[in-house]
Length: 375
Image (cartoon, rainbow, N blue to C red; front, side, top):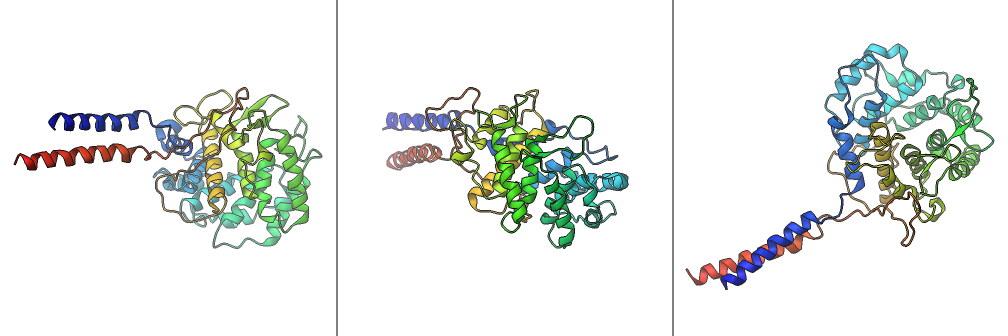
């Protein structure tokens, strides 16, 4: 009996060890979140408050919207940064900070002693030529709860954005020629679609523009399922993430066959741009918080889409906690496009543990039986 119990205990311990060692990789979203939340990876300098750092703002927004706690230093940092640079802020800066502070539970009406919502409302959007100063303010206005932005202001932004659409259906970084021509790009087009999303079902002009933009975006997809600029042969995690965000904002499934190439969807293709540590890889194949936060936004947007939850640019008060696991899609079996993402397998990490635990408990029970017999 003693030999039997010893063998059973060894088997139980071996099983438990195997469950830990041979468990499948963690959920990609969890890995990306962990990387972005690690200050050692981002290297942000919260002591430099001369001007708001967009990477710090977007990281705070993204972590908060993903249900995680942003860096504790952010509140004091952004307050001081706005105080020191308020008169220099562009509309895109105002919008970004409104998004980040609101998502973090701060009052955007009192950051650095300034009401950022009033400042955002006071901008002359008909004169804006950089599309980031149109798309992000519109997203911020629809994100801010408890503050009513005039419909006339929003409509001015919509009309100015619509006027910037190019014949190919895409949208450019800037609507005027600054010396190198005006050309559409994937990222700006996807951002414009995100801003238009709330008006798609009610505004015929917006619906027509968005439909054309989707045709343009599809033309920017690589055989790997990722997006970027086929003209220059550059695919990127940032472009891929922005397209996922655009599709989810419209209520479209980014893993649907329509948005796959060689059986690989944009969601699966995100794996191409992740390091082993979960950091997003930029054009130089180096870990970069800029790429990382956008990839996390895409994972969060897709997870919300799967769960029937509000889109990423919808403010919902959430309690920070562990990232929820969800099943992202995988390439169809039998497909192996060059450079395509490997199969995304998000495991139920607790699946094998009960077996090991049961064996341990069984062995322990046997020990107790033996002890009682020999008591």
